[in-house]
Image (cartoon, rainbow, N blue to C red; front, top):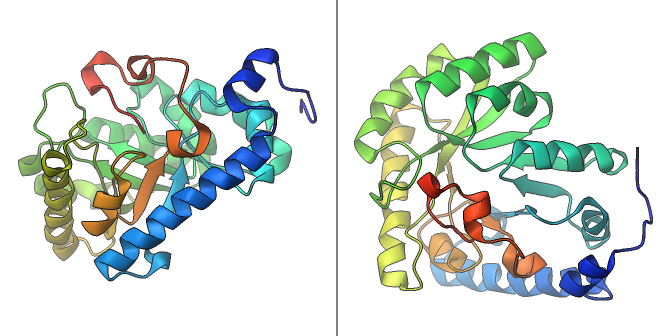
Amino acid sequence: MHHQNRPLSAAEEERFGPDPVSAFRANLAAVEERIARACERAGRKRASVRLLPITKTVPAPVLRLAHQAGIRHCGENRIQEAEAKRADLADLGMEWSIVGHLQSNKVRHLCGFAREFHALDSLRLADLLNARLEREGRSLDVYIQVNTSGEDSKFGLRPEALMPFVETLERFPRLRPRGLMTLALFSSDMERVRPCFALLRRLRDTAAARNPALQELSMGMSGDFEQAIEEGATVIRVGQAIFGRRPTPDAFYWPASAGAETL
């Protein structure tokens, strides 16, 4: 069931403007410029950073327009929202990443369509994912989530728990470890945010010595991705800088136990 060419609702037009394709292209160009400048400052090649657009709360008809603007890969927090959009946009061949905390009862759904999962944070979840992927006959790229801010409100492994977790990964052959992911301290003070990124990079270096597949760093969002790139980010998760502010409070997408994040 595809809703091609459905006109935008009044609410959608109010939120995204009368010409979302042009707006998204302009926003992507502005984000691209910020990425390029950050890479230059860090002495890195632009190709070393992948932009993952975060599309949570962006309705499927609007994502059709985002596709016209060049977006081919969507990052979502909630499995049900991602699944519904994937069904509506099946003709476009979009790729889907899940970047939010995963409840065990949603494992089956994720394994049916996601290209990658950025929030692996427990052995139980690794075991459930591996078993389901075995049934599906496929593998999944995974990023291990680490709590670098030390906040009790956030999901993710404590830094000291990372290496014991890495040691167990070979028990889950259907999981393809790619790297580490973190949600930095939610603050406009970059001198407080940057140490979260630097810590993840150090942890990645240690983890990669044990498992060379763990090379990637998924870190940085709309407000802080330049600092993340300067500290080594290889995947940045950017939503509002592309799609504009969200109508729902962040707490709707990040449960109280996850902290308020602005991807």
